Image (cartoon, rainbow, N blue to C red; front, side, top):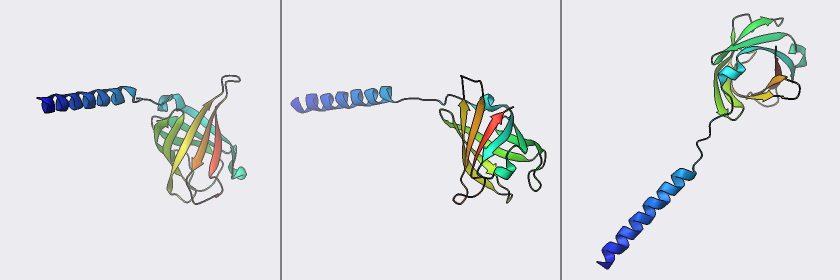
Length: 142
């Protein structure tokens, strides 16, 4: 009888611990989704300054396509520059960025919404090899 009572007590304690751990777990969802990014963005600052202010990308759904560009090469109007944009954490999104070598790179995009002046910015970190030109970029909503 003592063994049964001890076994039942341990089982109940285990169930209580399991329920408590599940209730404390955060089901955190990101602050923003791809709908918050919808619209046109202009490249304003980057680690490759000769490309700054020369490209516009519009986001619709989970992709961003080139609207206009003054850069010759792979970035022609209609090209998908950013694909598979997915919310990751709070204001961070993961996506694939089309590089000038026509390859897509795993990347991170941080959405910054300045409530003081109303300016909305995207900070992009492209996971290319090292500190290559264009490995970080700032884009501003138009």
